Length: 295
Image (cartoon, rainbow, N blue to C red; front, side):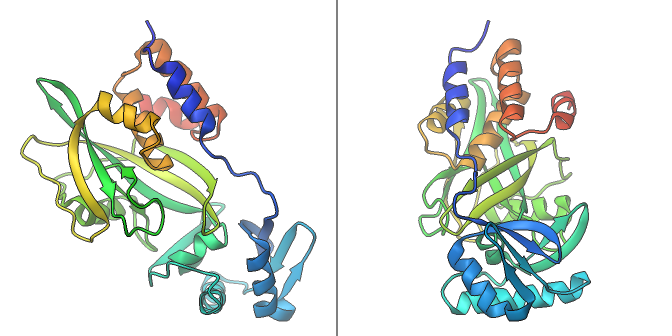
């Protein structure tokens, strides 16, 4: 028998924002299509790059360098120039690496990725507690000073993968910074989810590496970096209602819903329907389906 909220879950997923270019231009760097930029960003990049830029009707082509190191230096210079013009916000002095066709393509300031519509990678962790009263989930409330989605609800751990970090190192760092969580054994990722949506900065095009952890009853989440206002335990039923009510960030909602699938929460038929919908909407690749369910 299917869960009574299946229709609500499917409706929620269908309403999740998905990027379709409007006036954005496809960004090419050294012949590789790597992002999307708003017209104002495109105009500024043409002025900054000069003879190394060519703007077409629907695309912007930039020449940086023939190798990753040189390309990173040039693109970082463009990022600084955009920041000085007020076109690149939320500067963090945190480098991130753009992967292209399985290889490191360039490294630049984290804030540039969304303004240039380039793909990022993140790690998110569902923190579970099995109790006599049923399964509970750790829910974090984002700081009201966060640049993106302030005050929204989030997974216990969630953050971008910094340049040079492995998934294990990135998860361990984020777990400590956001929840004061130290792993005895770092869990393995259970799947990858994808989200692509228009945001104020530009575009969130993100591969989300999803993790699960069953935490002891004595664990208390203690944020270390000021990015989480509060974190607490909640019955999964209550958390799901908050997801459907729009209280969660979109990416955290995806991670939580997938976590419920791994808990067989919606029953066999309900799980299958939601899985297929995630695939059809582009949030989950079919090749990750079996691996995610078998662990």
